[in-house]
Length: 308
Image (cartoon, rainbow, N blue to C red; front, side, top):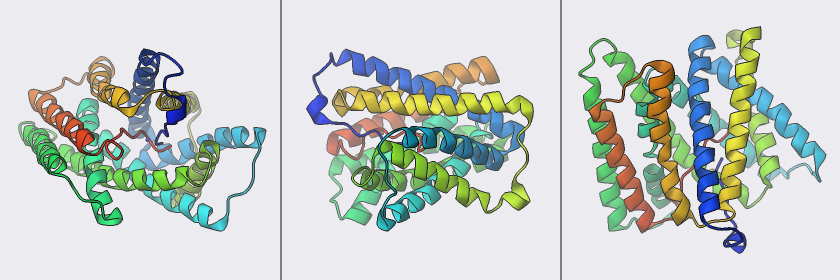
């Protein structure tokens, strides 16, 4: 899931509709990546999926970093890279572990609550004052989560797994919100290609500490899906960054929620998952709460994507 950094000086260079369409395409690619990750996690577990993906992404990012002007980051910047990598590792492990136990649309709907957590963390860590709109947004978001969780009790056959998956996804959103704050700090100190390289490298190193006990060799038939996941992730990040450099966030924020539509469609086509009315209603409330929060503090409510 990396945060896109927009450049106001480039706004207006192209028609606003083009960045909106490009951003929507990026959301589709990242939604497809989530679906592919679900397949890989079911096949070989969340740890090995994230470990091998981080290693492959490190190689790809390393080639891009080596091809241009480069310099090793200062010690303070490297510490920030490592700190964010630890947080990202927790995000990825918890989110994809939960994703393997939930319908795709349900997991994506729950993940939309991350911007609300970002607002709360900004108040706690940065001393920002929470506006009344943000408080109402949080109440609506919590209500949306409650509706989704309540709907799970109607499915006795997988209620326990679903509740554990929900807890994992919600935990990932808390760390994802913290990742958003770290991403903003990173963007002021390092170029995107450097962030991609050292973040993926740090995640691979951190997860690699448990490799003697948990790692398995990647089966030959999974190399192509893993390469596809990495390509979808990098392409989605690139297109998202391109769009945010050329249009204001107010035009692009609504495209983030198209991920739920793609999740419903992909879940139905490939996993035979039908979105329940509780999932639709709960996700609708969460989306509405994020839009309310965006009106009260648009910078911190901007959509955030997969960090790696």
